[in-house]
Structures are given as structure tokens and as C-alpha cells.
Length: 246
Image (cartoon, rainbow, N blue to C red):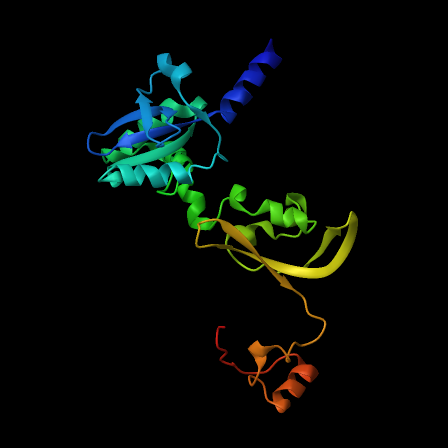
């Protein structure tokens, strides 16, 4: 009996719902349905009797498309705030939201509940979005896996946070590729994630070079022979060079 109750509590903690606050009326509601065609929403009051009508989500659910369409549908989307709230603490979180809107102090626990659940206008947890540029599910896992990299490797080499922040990884990782059914080692590389023109996150692979590539057109006329010798001898130029972005 105790084990079953514990399992139910754990499941409840994993279940999230998306709550909405209308800042014009200070009324809250819970989303019950997202229409597939236009991504419009239907809501119900956040009462326990409507529990079965709540749309159940998790923290990794990609919501960017919904928020883009939502902003296009409403003339003033800033009148609304959204929260991805664990179902188990829905009442406490929404009460704290209303208290803050009224200028009241919900206490440290209430502030933490709101901070951990408030979404930004891209559908990402606002607190994490301020820290990270991307969410974990946005990373180009297909491209990473094709180079022999997985989540565990990135975590173990302290590279996951750097990728999520949009930085170049400080550690060069061994990469490989399967060619005609055979695994081929491709040396080492650092990585960086950037958002492309289509909004998708792309992987930039920065391979480690065994020797300078001065013969490439992009480097033509950039370094003098003296500077090349200095780079070969010391590994540093001791100054800054301006290059044209081709």
C-alpha cells in the first residue's frame, strides 16, 4: 500500500500542466486542449474537479511553435503569462502567482514555485532561459550521435552546459563516423550550437588541425612569413589580426 502511494506521488510530481494568467483580470486557468491546426487553446478553471480535463505535459515538451502561433493570434499577447506547473503543487503555485500580482509576499517557498514554473515568450522556463541559450531537447542530437557523441559523453566532459549556453566547448572530444558499416576515427573536435535562419539549432564542428592551414584562400595575405615563423615557434602571435569574413 505504501509503495503504491509512493509511486502515485512520484507520477504526480512528473505530471505538469500549463497554467495561464490573464494579467488584465488576475484570473488563472489551466490549458485543457491545444488545437492541432492553429495551436489555439482551450482552458478550464484550475479546480480539482477539472483534473481529468487538464492537458498533461512534461518539462521537455517543445512549446515554441505554440507560443509563436499564440503571439500571432492575439493582438496583445503580453496580457498573458504562462506557467508549466507540477500538478502536485498547482494550487500553491497559482495562489503565489496571484499574491505576487497583488503586490503581496507569497514567502520564499511561493516565490520559488513561481520562479521554477514561469515560461518566457518562447515557451521555455524563464529562469533557465536566462542561464542557457538552448534547451536540452533543442540540441541537434542526430548530428551529435552521427559523430559518436551522446548525452553521457557531453556531461562527463563538462560540455553540455557550454553547448546549452551557445559557447564553443572547451574540451576537444574524439569523433568518429560510420562509413560503409565500419567505424572510422576522425580525430578530435570542439563544438558549438547556433540557431539557423529557419530557427533550428545547428551543430558547428571545429576540428583540431595538425598543421596550420595558411594555404587556404581565407588566410591569403593575412600573415607575413615572420608572423608564421613566430606562430610555429611560440604558438601565439602576440597581437590581433583582422580578417575578412568570407
